[in-house]
Image (tube, rainbow, N blue to C red; front, side, top):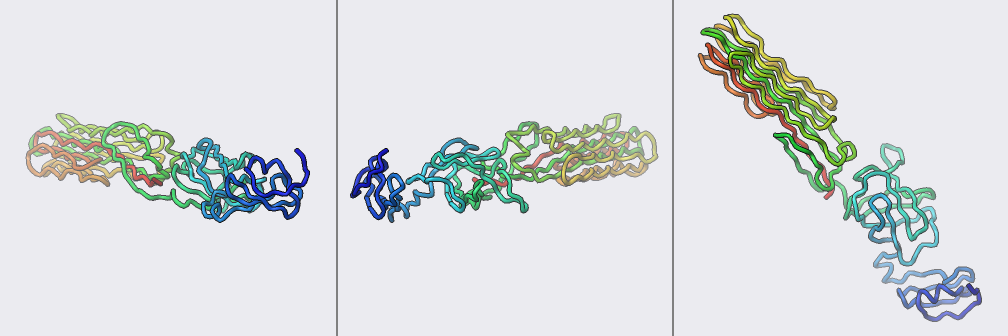
Length: 349
């Protein structure tokens, strides 16, 4: 390209870029309305943003291109090169799923980092949400995420599972609180007059705070089946509830069968694993053979059945994860109740 000095007055952006104006020469870019100022060395001159360009912020803001984790920006006018302290804004076009880069005007992809617990590091899944506007600043090595004009938690919702299925996070889920409850055990039966069966134990309870990255695209939901009512037998054990391999909570055990006027044990509660908060289920109440069948154990989401005080079958538990009552006087026990999973989601959209 020739470096002959010219007197610039006005021309298109393409034509202006072919010349190197002398120091102090001024031209008008008829393509975008910006002024250019010559310095004798820069092809096309130094762009001086117009008031309109400043108001539109087109020199530092654009809608993101590229892909979710490889973002591109096309600014007008184009930046010459990266320089420490440069600030840009973009409207995200997709949710990121992990480490993310930004390439402005084809000057090279640079990592976008965030400050977390005093450490600068790569973005995690869900740090960038489609439709949100973000500010980044170049520090000489990478971009640092400064803020999100939108994209924080704006909605809290729940998904409740009372049967088996698949948990798929809602749009924009950033993190969630997961509560898992095993099923309750059934009450034991009683063989004869003045005999009582033990009450069923409650399912274990587990609770964790999990990020979108820990959940991933989806998780298998398993809901424990209710422990069956004892019929000429001990009560059935409650089934295990789980969310993938993240949290597992065993069901409560069934109450013992009453075979004499002695007392018979209630079922032991279930145990939990992997959760941040682990709570073993309560034990069912024992029977008193000459007086009553044992009460079922309570759970965080259900009341156990009351003791059976007359010659009758034990009542079933209430709600979720509770135990059934033992029968009294040659009667069967009551069934426990099924497990439950409650997921409270914190979403950005």
